[in-house]
Every structure is written in C-alpha cells, then in structure tokens.
Picture 1 (spheres, one colour):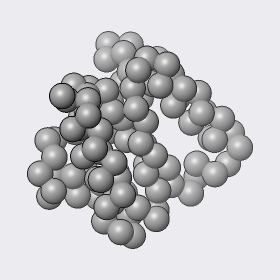
Picture 2 (spheres, one colour):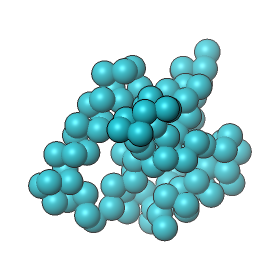
Picture 3 (cartoon, rainbow, N blue to C red):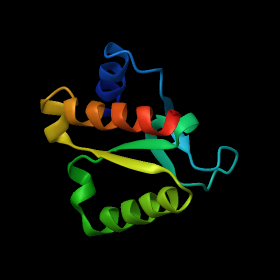
Picture 4 (cartoon, one colour):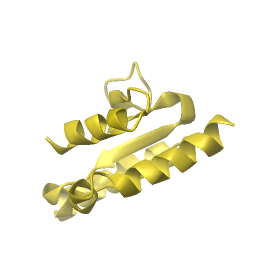
Length: 103
C-alpha cells in the first residue's frame, strides 16, 4: 500500500510518526479525512493513486482538500511519481512546512 510506504519513508528520514486517517474534526465521523498528517503543524498528506483520476473521485478530492485548506491546513498531494523517487519531493515539502509552521 503506497500510504504505508510513504509513512515508512517519513520515519526513515526522521520525521515524527504521522497520524493515520487524520480527520479534520477528530470526533466527527463525517469529517473529511486525509491519508496521514500532522495536526500540530496542520499538514495533511494525500496519496492520490490511479483511482483518483475518475471525475467522481476527483470532485470528492477537491471538496476534501478545500475543507482542509479553508480550516488553515496545508494539503500535500503525493502521487506514484513521488513513490518512484522514495517520496523525496514530498519529504522536502514537508520538511520546509515543518520548519515554517513549527517556528
């Protein structure tokens, strides 16, 4: 599962353990959720695989991401291209966000 590989890559590069299936509103079962993220810096990572290319899924993703962004979160979209490169781009983006938002 790509989300697991992303999590393992983050841990291998000394990021803290991310929260899995992170909900925008933790106690609301209808709240939008992301694959993994860090509530402390309000960053959510979404792995968008091939099924995210369908029009229906793309529209759901847009609504999900808009909900996070309107609440002040940063959404990092991760794809198969990132997987092929051990998530280097996503890690670099996350490291920059961590430095900026944790300050």
